[in-house]
Amino acid sequence: MHKTTGQHPDPKFTQFRHSPLKIYAKTAIAASKLEQFREQAAIFQPVKDYDLNLQLINEAKGLLQFLDTPNLSRLSDLPYIEIHGLPTDCSLPSPPRNGRRPDDKQTWVSELLLLSIALLAQLHPLAYQEVKNGDLIHQIAPISGRENSTSSAGRVYFDSHTDLGILRLLYRPEYLALLALVNQKSVATFLSVLDDVIARLPSSVLQTLSQPRFRVQSPEVMHIWGGKIIVSEPRPIIAQDDHGAAVVAANLKTTIAIDSKASTALAMLQQAVAEAARPVILEPGSVVI
Image (cartoon, rainbow, N blue to C red; front, top):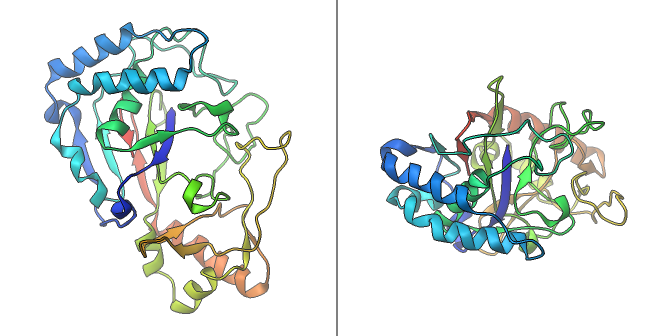
């Protein structure tokens, strides 16, 4: 699976409705256009020693002509969007076991597809130097020797979380996009809409969650100071952004409650998130943003 994160230029992006939008690419985009996208994307080969992320973004911009569809203009009103039936590489190697792009992956169709979809939705992909060595596209597959890691490198259950929640809101990703390449066992990704979670919690718990009574840890995927795990100052889990929209930032497994009242509120939040979770099964050629 590929993943990319980024930010949205519209402050209304965080104010979601409750029903996701599903698009089936072959009904929204002419099949010939999809095949043209695959053919053109398969030609791309990055130039060595030049910024790979920038090359991918520029190439993805040029490929937008093959994905022109009005449906994605509605994205800013929805909590997430699913797109199915998209073209990927004609030939794929085995999934990577080291967290990096496989050396024997000959074409860049899937990477360019994921970036093109993000750009089509007017999203701004970004990368962090401390995460996956600054790669714009992350490889989501178990890593040898880290199967028990509670991260994208492991095979164990990965609790609900917001990406890079330790970062301040200004620097935090506002969206993520996942593209499935292999999903032989039809494993689901679970998404919880914050509005649904808040509706399940009493006001007293929401008040506690909105107070600086929690410490957020840096995720395992973030490589800081030789791999150290750092912990934030006391901060709320649920807050409001500059536009009054509710935002959440936490990994529900590693977030530390600093007193008993906060611990109870955190446990109730975990339960509410689990109850609100919606399964999304991504088959090869499917994207969720």
